[in-house]
Length: 293
Image (tube, rainbow, N blue to C red; front, side, top):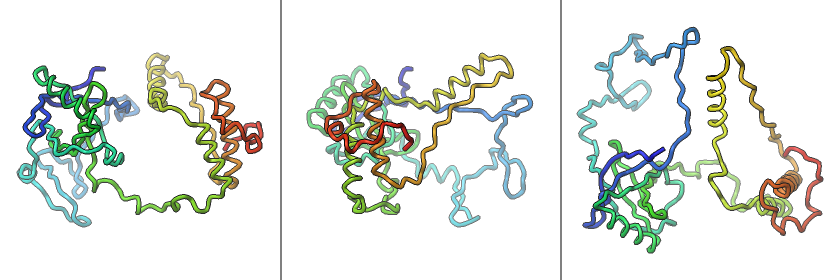
């Protein structure tokens, strides 16, 4: 599938302007379903019904309101929205250049490719190569579909990528969560040792192509089979994964069994053999009989 152009504009920093196209960089595999009437498969349409009088509401009587307290709304008109509407400048305005390591990964949202127009190829290559050599990214503001976004411009091989960011106040502070203390002061030495051995045994080089959306793939396969099957044919029941017990009591034995199963799986062709540090301690490995963790 070819990348889709969102808009045509420019990258601006200082007095430099680079004409570019903003292209989609990811494809989601979400399947979209329609609601149907079970009797005749007619599509069920959404209707606008007033919760007070129960009447159907035509579009020309629909207003947008913000609930300031329970049941009380502030109504805004189209003119109100126009007053605060950001100008669609069709430009990526770089404000500053920073080290990418300074940006919290929690802020990253969605990537787009930046493709240069013919007359901007030289300047595009210059900025890309400069960012690569300087190991910097550009922090920018950009308006996409009437919404202003914070973003970064970074070099990725021969391409430049515009990656949208969340604003800082959109990220939930983890201090509100009930979390165990750092360094796990209640964990004993045996648990830490077993956990470290399991991490070492499962260590690998990340390859995103090895991971797939199995749920979407199985749904598509079921839809394709149903589309070609005879009417009334029932699909094969999906295999259910074994339930794992949630009341883990002996954490060390669970970790050791996991280590043993990982070692057997990789030695049998399921991946690289475990590291020597994991193999040199037979006394800490679990019995060979397979058990659920």
